[in-house]
Length: 114
Length: 118
Image 1 (cartoon, chains in turn purple, yellow):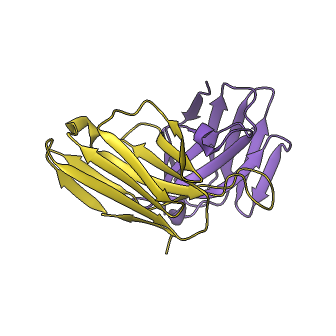
Image 2 (image 1 turned 60 degrees about the vertical axis):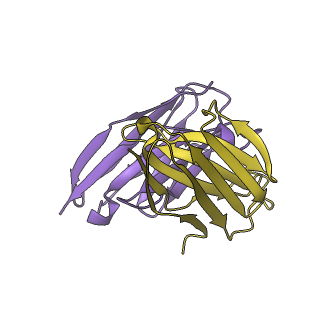
Image 3 (image 1 turned 120 degrees about the horizontal axis):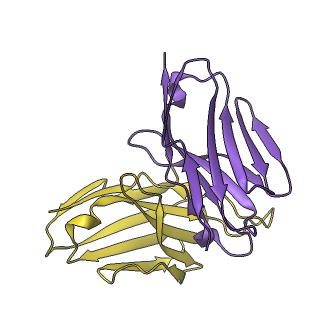
């Protein structure tokens, strides 16, 4: 079955710097890769996702890149702000099943210092 | 408002108690899920219901019993739990597959129930 590894587990950056979180997956059939943000005491929320037919996707300060050959994908946050502080989860799944096939990484706690 | 409402927000129960967690979604989705979130662990899928039918049960102990009476409501019945079952239990819903795109749609999570088993 699918296995998703996420690094680092904690990340501290200065406001305005960039943050990068990396994930690897094991199942080459996986073709959907969402990222969720969970602020302290709140529910996880989707911030961006990418499908295997594209290599990069951007949404304002957030971007995700996908390398299918190496089976890894990354989240890039530029010009970080204190409100970016949260736990970020990557996930991978195969489209052909349901969300029940969505496998999550262990999460990265991002702290943005003012 | 999240669109997915969970009650209660916090629950403390003894190992011999019976309690239920409730989830309601107002998004018109056809799939609902229970996830367990423990410290320093990935989100663990417990149960999936698609069109009210249970499609997945990820080897969850029988002390957890789900119920999905309709596509908008999902329950998790708890009995004789263990202290290691203490965690945040998250409900989620999605439109699976998405009616417009045919793709998987995002999961919409509730705020969770923080469960403590004493």
